[in-house]
Image (cartoon, rainbow, N blue to C red; front, side, top):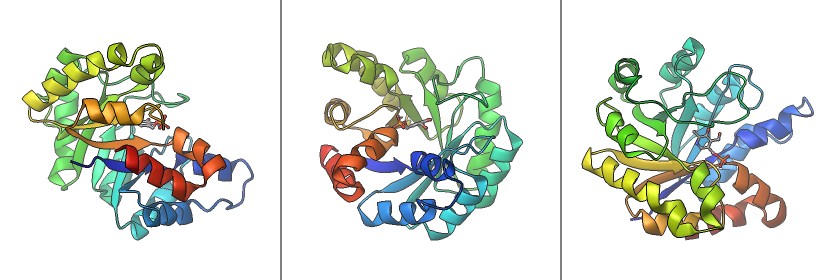
Length: 238
Ligand code: PXP
């Protein structure tokens, strides 16, 4: 089974914002990623709009022909309202703090079970598939099984950090987490720090992997190889 590649285009917005104009054009970049073979586009609007802006999300939603995935913290009403307005194929709920550089932890699905159940129901009622960002811990994934979520997104920073020392050790907690997800009938997504080197082994080890969302490494590699080549190279890994 092929795993879908959703390209996170936040970094393109960061580059645009650094000069204040519209170069590079984020909406055009989304169109091009699709043309180059991406199976989806991911955006992660944050309250300070330091990369993707809420207006970008609205614009992209009009042109998207692949899967649109919006990530963010549902504890901000502005985020929830945006997702309900745009109705993407998938919303990925991430418990990040407003000023956080990048996501650095998953949900505590046990402590936050009631909260998650309620918020997930709101999105699902609107026909939006829900994924929740989780650390690769069996009890956390089992807890996700009790929230009504369709999928979990396994937070892969730890995998990426340990991959070069020992890929077998690096993948071990993810194998257990993935088995638990399957046991509870949850689909499996993954993301954070996946790259050209570590992606193929992750996919081979977890064949049930439905989707990866990758931003930083794809945009960094595109400086050397070009965006079209990079998207194709990553797709081949999957
Ligand atoms: N998944 C989530 C929940 C994220 O917050 C991010 C980063 O915005 C990613 C995936 C993609 O991570 P990376 O940019 O390291 O590929």
